[in-house]
Picture 1 (cartoon, rainbow, N blue to C red):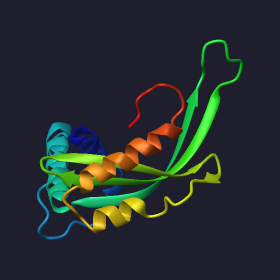
Picture 2 (spheres, helix red, strand yellow):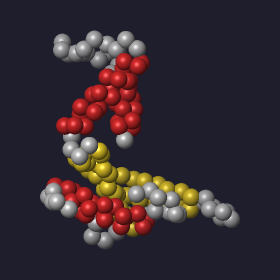
Picture 3 (cartoon, helix red, strand yellow):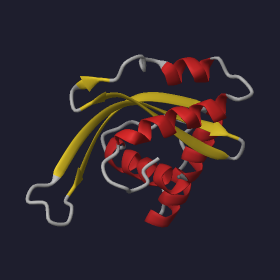
Picture 4 (cartoon, rainbow, N blue to C red):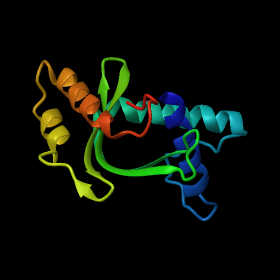
Length: 145
């Protein structure tokens, strides 16, 4: 997961920090090479991650599968709440499916947000149950949870 955050930070730094951008007086000197840039970006993302403990967003996830003997691939679009939280020394993600191929799933709105904002001792276990329940909407036998 840290590698993904580092890659996102590098892209953000490379795309967001154009030559016309003004640097505040307290900014460090520019990186001398790509390796130093990647190390700095990684350190910055890890530092940010230490301060950030919970992110909940809306995700649109399209799956497709072309099975043996099938003439057309199967497709499924899931709309979910996705929570990413810091637990001990790791990041944990939970998906709660709200909509499957345009059809709303009953009684799922804000379940993860409510669960995570009202942190309880068994919150991680409850979050895992929600994610496991949502996995039933995945296409095929591939583990995506």
